[in-house]
Length: 230
Image (cartoon, rainbow, N blue to C red):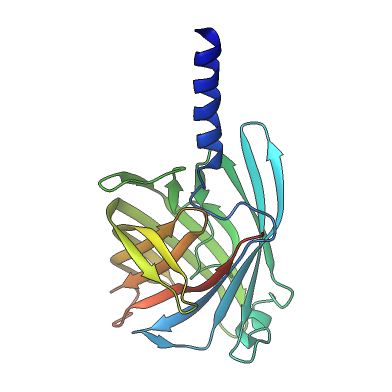
């Protein structure tokens, strides 16, 4: 009886370990994105790479390298202006699969990041409420000077599951998370809506901001392709 129970518990534990979290956690994985305004390409292509994975007590520490490229595959001029010519390396801690989203794709260039946007659980389901938070940062921008950003997400909820086909032809089953965004950038304060698509083992597949900071057209960062180590 004890041996059967032990086998069952080990099987459950293995299934939990095999379940991918809402983010990339394997060294060598990568994801390439593009920025769009009203569905039109704006010529900025972020790329995330899993640089290192380290096991900690109760979880993982995953380091990501963020780079921004132009249409020719060279480091984007905007990234150089922000002092990110060599990329930006940041670390996410996964505790039992959950993590705090502090590095979204639209504000990835910011410095002195504090707080978080979302507390992402290890798994999602339709109808689930997601804890939102406040994220703030400052960045020194040439000509503009010091730029402060503060963003608060609230009322975040998983509204549906949806299949998304990428430009690469890859298809992912995503969870759509919607809610309110309120914040300040360049001394302008406004509210709007924010929509995320998350996929297990990938993380953000699409991030869209609507009617926020004078954006009369939807601004989005969307996954173009991804690669997982063999």
